[in-house]
Each structure stands twice: as C-alpha cells, then as structure tokens.
Length: 205
Ligand SMILES: Cc1cc2nc3c(=O)[nH]c(=O)nc-3n(C[C@H](O)[C@H](O)[C@H](O)COP(=O)(O)O)c2cc1C
Image (cartoon, rainbow, N blue to C red):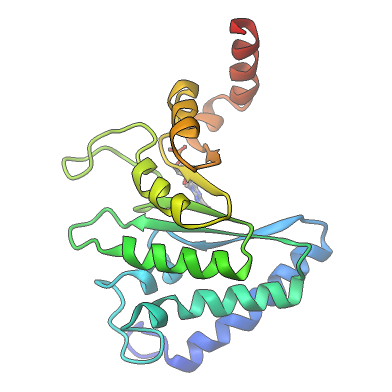
C-alpha cells in the first residue's frame, strides 16, 4: 500500500474473499448477500470520477471503474451458485460538489443486471441523509435517480433514503418501475411500523 492507495495486486486480492464470505454465509443458512458499493466506502470510491484517480485497470474508463465490483460479483456467483440471492447497494450520487457518480452507477447496474444480479438498491451520500443547504429535505429523496435506473434494467430496484409515508411510496410504485422500498431509521423508533401501516390500510379499504 502506497500513501493509502491500494496497489493493483492488493485490489485483486479482494475478489476471492468476497466469494469465500458469500459461500460461508450460504453454508450458515443465509438466503443471500448484498455487496455494499455505496456510502463512499472503497467500492463506492472506485465508481466516482472525482475520487478514483487510478492509472491502472481499476481507474479511468467506466469499464475500469466498475471492474472490481463486477469481478467480485462474478466470484460470489461462482462460489455461492445461481440459487443464492446476490444484491448490491450503491450510490447514484455522492451528494458532494463534484458529483458525477450517476453515469458509472447506471453503467454498473446494466452490467450486473445482464449478469443476473437479483436486486439493486439505490442509495446516496454517506447513507443516513441529513438536510443541508446543498441537499434540502425531500421524502424518498433518490426517487428520480432510482426510477431512471429501474427503467434501464430488468431486475428489481429498491429505493432507500427518507421513505416515510405509504402514500408517497404507493405513488412511486404506481408511476415508476421501482419495486421495493428499504427503510432504516423509522424502524429503529418503531420496529412494527410496516405492520401498523398494513393495519391502517386494511381499515381504510
Ligand atoms: C445507525 C445506522 C447504521 C447504518 N448502517 C448501515 C450499514 O451497515 N450498511 C448500510 O448499507 N447502510 C447502513 N445505514 C444506512 C441505512 O441502511 C439507510 O441507507 C439510510 O439510513 C437511509 O434510510 P432511512 O432514511 O430510512 O434511514 C445505517 C444507518 C444508520 C442510521
């Protein structure tokens, strides 16, 4: 490692353990795994033009920026098999000033969909969204990005980030190709929230 930047060999060494850990998860009884390529962690940084300045086969072109994730996906699939769920969570935006992540996100989603990934979760920034001048509060904040991706791919797209009310999510379900919603912080406050939404919907029907 040189100044915090992994060498090409160090990057290649990541691929095999991805496959090994998926296989271990399968043997332990899990139904699937999700590759975390969002929230500005390492895989996420590779996809960002402003954060990936590599000169080797993992930097530069779209193909190169997506390469490690695709190689890791292929290894997971090879080791864990076709009957194991493989998902990815990735950023459509890093929510910073020089943000051009959408193009690589879209490219990668198409590649992974063609290879048979089971679902794609569209996220952004560091994960838990907080309102800021650059980024004011908006419910289901990444709906437009996720809807564009969902139009492109034939696999389920999951929207995460400030999903808060059933009416808004229902409207998204009815007007886009987004199929699922992930919710995090509301469930910390109220773990039975989906059940209470379900009860309310039954009463209104
Ligand atoms: C305390 C906390 C821990 C989190 N840990 C993870 C994590 O390990 N992996 C992940 O993909 N997202 C993680 N997230 C992000 C959430 O999964 C989710 O993407 C984000 O909070 C936006 O959804 P929300 O607006 O419904 O909270 C975490 C969020 C919180 C608040």
